Length: 257
View 1 (cartoon, one colour):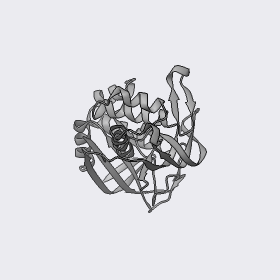
View 2 (spheres, helix red, strand yellow):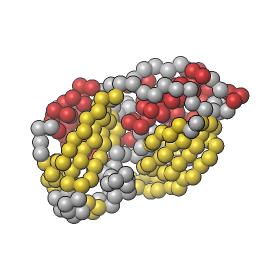
View 3 (cartoon, helix red, strand yellow):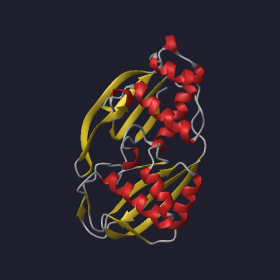
């Protein structure tokens, strides 16, 4: 089960972000987990496995490119936790405070919305659109972790499948083979690249924008279409690609009739 948090706060001062705001959200999450359970926080921070959470950058009115906080204005960010026990511990802590430490200052905690997600859309889709709300890129392990900032369906859905299998349920191995045979194809693309600073000296380049996909008739498979639908629904909480825990790869899925 995913425990999804939307956290609204009011900035106590006006301050610029000197790096990507999602990196601050990630830092806030680890700081909070250390308050709750230091050993758990260290295990998550040093683990080389798939991190059991994803975040968004700070946003205001669905604008994910915030460069500064303005005193007295309200902002939001989200955190999705894939381990229910960790999510419950985080909820217990957040509901006990009225000020949130963020960007080196204490800010008024305006509202916390908690949503439990244990099922995902399961429909036979043929066409869909993905809105890449924050920069997205993929790693290719067998090419010395070369970075790819293109919406290649094979990389996109393999990324989602790894996360889904780690925290939700197993998938048939034939699904990956189907992906490699272009079971999903790009039908329209309107993207641009953006460069973000995740920490001192560490830059990432990813794409944002909208991409339309289709499942070609000659490879169409009803079971795999339903799996694709579930992965897309899951991906709205998990993010996709590299830098998920710092708010990169945040997506919105739209089915095209």
